[in-house]
Amino acid sequence: MTATDTPPRQRFGELVKLQLQGRRFLDRDQERRLLEDGITRYGLSLDQASGLLRGAAQEDSIALEGELGASSRELLRTLADRRDRIARDDFRRAVAFYRARAGGGVTEAEAQKRVKRLMEELNLQPRPTGRIIRSRRWYRAIEA
Image (cartoon, rainbow, N blue to C red; front, side):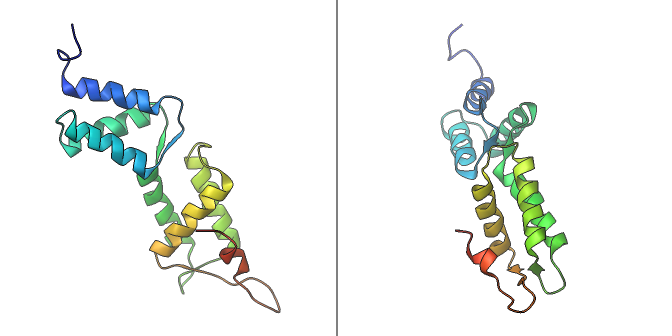
């Protein structure tokens, strides 16, 4: 049996397993490249390629940035106050949540950048800290 005898879905599934091997986290660019390969090289529909990718990721407990971003957005929305501001402690909780869901595949600094980016997408502002001089320096110190 040669490689051309096996169905495209099965070949793409094997490619996905190979690409996910040894990873704990798959970012959007990597996910997009795998989906593009499934569509262009293997002739699968987007739904088929996406289903195979998500199934393999779930089987190996690998976090996908797209899914992780959705749950992190919901968490940020619930942590925000009435004026759409996030406190520093709540930001730290969101970063810890992101890292835990990523399975250790993301550093602290990278998780802070990604959570800050999510806050900006949701138009959430940082809440100033300090008693006398209130500042958002903690937020500005995070490189985006």
